Amino acid sequence: MKVTEHLAKATGKTLFSFEVLPPKKGENIQTLFSNIEPLMEFKPPFIDVTYHREEYVYRKHTNGLLEKHTVRRRPGTVGICAAIKNRFDVDTVPHLICGGFTKEETENALIDLHFLGIDTVLALRGDPIKSEGQFKPEPDGHAYACDLIGQVADLNKGGYLDEEQDETSATNFCIGTAGYPEKHFESPNSGADIRYLKHKVDRGADYIVTQMFFDNEQFFNFEQRCRAAGITVPIIPGLKPLTTKGQLTALPRSFYLNIPEELSEAVHLAPDNAAARQIGIEWCINQSRELMAHGVPCLHYYSMGKSEAVRKVAAALF
Ligand code: FAD
Image (cartoon, rainbow, N blue to C red):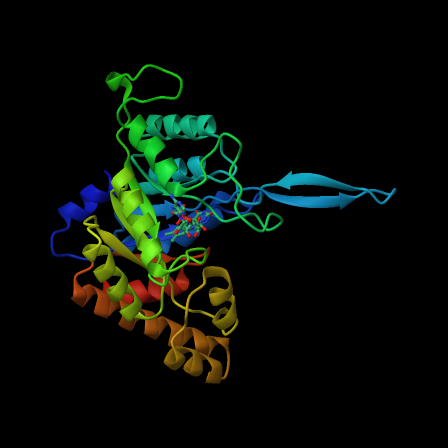
């Protein structure tokens, strides 16, 4: 079932969903399954699986020359989605990115997903790879998520690349897109960010999942600005319990977000990581309670490869 159908079915009830990362190359999928298993008692209607594009590494030869190599550390999003779906009988949402994909490769990935009965995708641009500095699309790829969304929406009408439109072979994907309560780091201002988000919805996005945030006011303001701009699709808040002192700097660095002073001070003063983690979990529970009372359709948790903290949050709420 599509994400939007799950949301429509759950009238008045807040759903619980979460996101996992594909295991690192060479690891066993069993590790991933055992991370998911403890979260299944909270009956998630869907589980997101992130996509990680290639990175470049440089190998130095004895003559001093550097040779460029491509490395993919977490491959297999499509296969992992199929494996989770079969193992737990739950809908899975693969993340699909522009970076590293030509339009043709995107079309092939979508055809595979359609065959597998996966009917929702989260369509993203992807971050620049470390060695690039700024995002560079493939020569025949998409520069922005809105264009990727457009391709999926076209396929939903039977519009395959280089073929006559044929509605009998149309796909039926529900399309998610990303939103940023604290603005995407490349946007000149939040007004422009919301305009681009509206454009993604106009191109075919059916729902929005937000970047993580630690201050609900940021979400409430974002939601209000979206509604004022005419965005009517469901908006799902993304949350993550803070679990180490190191995340006080790592999360703002990676995700361009603010950590409220009250939380950062408490974590900073915590005697050790175990105490910091407890503070992070309680903060996330309180955030979740307020969002549930506000009437959000679903709470989406970033597990970032470890599910125990998310399980503790869910156990207090669902
Ligand atoms: P876009 O919507 O294309 O926006 C990128 C930037 O361009 C923004 O600054 C935007 O304002 C601007 N912009 C948008 N449209 C236009 C336009 N038409 N003209 C000019 N400017 C425009 N990354 C991964 O690699 N793998 C993942 O699995 C993954 N999962 C994610 C899940 C969620 C819920 C979120 C919030 C992010 C995720 N990301 C993931 C990170 C994401 O890829 C990055 O944040 C990326 O930098 C932007 O992606 P986007 O889809 O928001 O891009």
